Image (cartoon, rainbow, N blue to C red):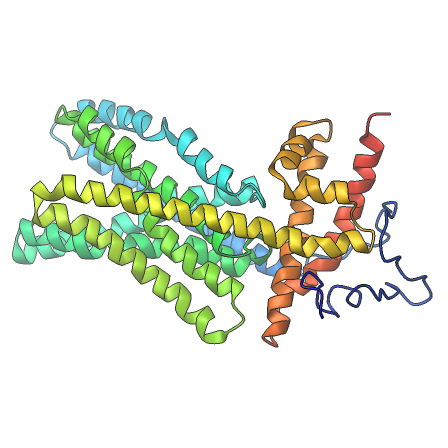
Length: 414
């Protein structure tokens, strides 16, 4: 009977236990169990994804530049085309305060959910800024153009309906979805599956919603309705955009976890259109039936509650996967049982993060989690007889883990 926790042979650097093989010719084989003192790495292997990451960064920078220009133009137009530019300027500043003030809480929620494999802060910042700057800029340009064309041809009512129900869901979900595509393609080492897709989608969408709300709150302040608008958009329904964009994130996450070509193509497309549908539905009902808002809100809260339950279930699944694929690291001596518990238990992660281990402890948790998930992706690819870049990350991550163990051992209190 095969051990259910044993890794496939080949890319992991050893055969399935208990028959351990020497890691290099001429060396003694690993013992089947026991502690092996950490050794610093002898060589440094280059990042196998370096060129792709550099290309992604260049595209992100270009997008940010264009997004900044577009958002500045839109803000200036909204201020100086209003009947009272001075009052509108004050309203925009007040709207920005109300839009960004609750962000600390909103951003904290996905970070807590992703406790087993927290994404790098710079990845989360890139996702947030893409939504706040790039997606708002380009989607705003398209929506403005669509409204001008259809309002001019068929009247303001038709222009508003087409923009709200058709153009906004398509354009906004497309440009937010580009952030998820970017992480999926250019930063594959930082994108492991469905949970990561949801986390990146949530940060991107919260950035988009914050900047979008500045305009809503400014107009509401001009109409003396800021309190009501903030309660509706900022308190009752803050998770609208994260929910829509998470459909795309789930699609790319399924594609990342699957070894089937047709799934890798269709899952992101299906997720995108699911997000567009939810977005369009939410915009359609109050546009056509204004009195249906309360009913929609009740269904919306129920759906969001179910959505968070799904996320929590996926996070638990991710934790079990990490534990499963780190067990053989204990058997070959790369980890101890105590270190395994530090990585896989919530209490251990808190201890490792906030104790004397400090930054090295956080890096250790992340490297161990990345190693387990890379092995998981490799195992899935081998099962489907596919090639995956995750296999190239296993050896560098093992060396990084060894380096961090040396640092932690030297830092340990005597």
